Image (cartoon, rainbow, N blue to C red; front, side, top):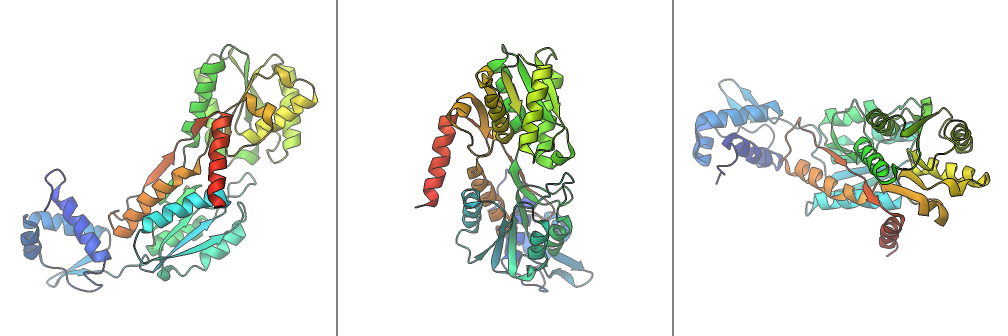
Length: 377
């Protein structure tokens, strides 16, 4: 029974797509003619014609003049396995794996796992280029990106998966040239929200933004956060916030901390509230201030946190939001289930951008401890 609230051709396309993907109509078989389908669904042949055209656009069927419409051979997406490729540690990998398992549901599919380091492009390419795509129903991958300022990636290898017809879901990182499903964090929106919160909470105290301007931080995540900082600075009066540009490479934390400290002393020595792209740089700066005996000048450190770091004194001053990977689970489940069931049209891509969660240190500590406890059960 078709619903009146949804266009009939959309519902019929979904039903026929699912039946084709479930092999009710095997490859090379002829689909029922327009009259038969019109009678089955209680609609006109014109509606059936629109639905069949949509299926043809997805390369699921092909009309042949004077013979009828036939089911196409499908490339990829037919195997009995799903590959998870990730560089994440156990805590974050668990959220990805849970999403995949829930998306599979009761389907008889096996899971394959492969891992690499967060910046080993060569190892990732070796794995991707040797996948047996005809054995896979989907690939869920956290893509590696280089950390040398050029933001290199294995776009060509991922594009080969897309072209094969195997559903691909990218997680945490994205690749601009590969148009596919994506589950990642809203780095720009979340960073901007944190800045707004910090300014509203501590706007009566002298504030400074540390803005890395070096080639090392030309990766997508850092650029999104820097853009949020720049947009905030453009929206507020310049006499409220000192903008301090940093040139030292972020992989040289000791040198970066020294540069931040020296420029703070030169340009904004009365500052009491400091904004950073991440808690790694905040902690490095705090340690430098402690060495100089000036840590008590700091009222608050505003920074995005991936994990907990620092000591009790540092965390008392930390004002942060966190990237909680638990959000990956429902997003991956939804997308993978839609792909495996055939509900997701070919050519349509899901883009799930997850917000960071604002927490004080006690809440964050409780959250991460709970996650760790799950792993050791």
